[in-house]
Length: 102
Image 1 (cartoon, rainbow, N blue to C red):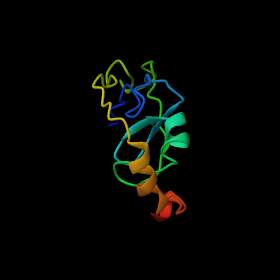
Image 2 (tube, rainbow, N blue to C red; image 1 turned 120 degrees about the horizontal axis):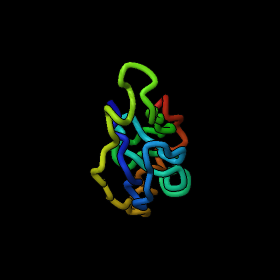
Image 3 (cartoon, rainbow, N blue to C red; image 1 turned 90 degrees about the horizontal axis):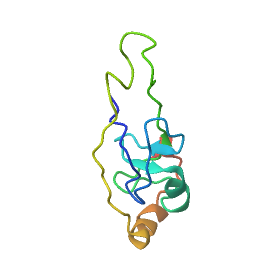
């Protein structure tokens, strides 16, 4: 189950469970759309993968207790600002490769 991490790992922007700005990689590294586009260039600094919009867990119990009330979002902040120069060197070699081919 997704943790639904509360903030962008780079800029620490709040990303509540219903945020349309949250982006995750396959390891659930969580960043805001602005950082993914303008800083990371769609390359995860932790694994080299790409990002997708994070799904939104229903706030209401529509069916079978599958909702935020039963499975709340994480409150653990993982603020690890990315060194832009180091990441630019890392991403340079792979950013042109589509994420599904990396």
